[in-house]
Amino acid sequence: MIAPRKEEFAHSFYERLFSYYPQTKHLFAQTDMRRQESSLMATLAVVVAGVERGDSLVPTLNTLGKRHSHYGAAPEHYPLVGGVLLETFHEYLGSQFTPAMQDAWSNAFELISNQMIEGTQKLN
Image 1 (cartoon, rainbow, N blue to C red):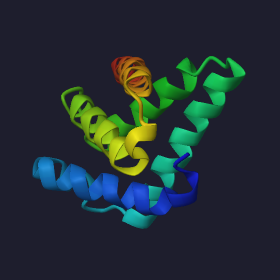
Image 2: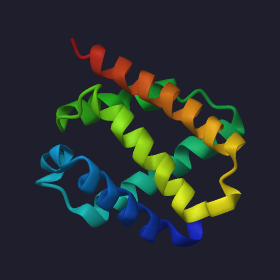
Image 3: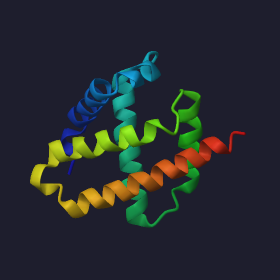
């Protein structure tokens, strides 16, 4: 549902993240934001496709968490990102983003975050 506007969606997501939580901007100081926006959308596509196929995403999410920790992401950043992601979905999908979809994405993001955080703990 987001794919036709994926570039705009990703750009809006990061604008919102930096506007609400300026303390996160330094995490992207050395980042090509167009590439980062593309990575966000690719990650969301992998998650959706994996869930649809019934794949175990745990190893992928653990690895993603390890990588994010190297960039400076900390466990307290995940709820910020999750809230902004849900709000951006709502902006782009409007009434199509039903309460059931919001609950599903909220639960999914919590599981994703937990696995990513677990991946960072495997670094030690």
